[in-house]
Length: 194
Image (cartoon, rainbow, N blue to C red):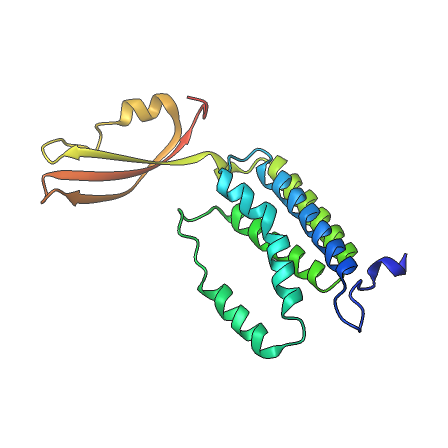
C-alpha cells in the first residue's frame, strides 16, 4: 500500500515510461473532474475541453521545468498572465479549474496515485454538495428597461406576486441620456422551470 504513494519519477530524471504513466493519469483525472463538473450543471464545450486537458498540460509543463528554478519562475509568470476572457465563471467552475491544475501538479511530481485519489475524493465531495439543496440556489437576476415616464415602483408587483417567492429591487440606473431606467431585480421563482 505504501508503494503507491512513492513518486514514479526517479532521482535519475524523467523517463519515457514515467512520462506516459503520468500523462495517462493526468488525462484520467481530467475525465473525473469533467464528469463531476458537468453533473447537474450546464457547461460549455470550451470549458469541458479546458477541464479535461488542463491536468495533462500542467503536468507536462511542470515535468519539463523540474529542477530548473529560472524556468520555473518564467513558467509561473506566464501562468499568471493567463486570463480567461470569457464571462466570469461560477465558483464551481473555478474550483474545477483549480482541481484540474492540482491533479496535473501531483502527476507531474510523479505522485500519480495521490493525484488520482485526491481527484476522486474532491469530485465526490463536489457531487455530494451538488445534491444538497441550498435556499438561495434558485435566485435569478432580472433586468428590465422602462421609459422614464413609467412609475415603476409598483408596476410589476402583480406579476412578481404570481411567479416569485421573493423579489428585491437591487438597483436602478438611467440610460439613453436619462430617457430610460434600467431596473435590476433579484428573484426567487416559485417554479424555476417557467
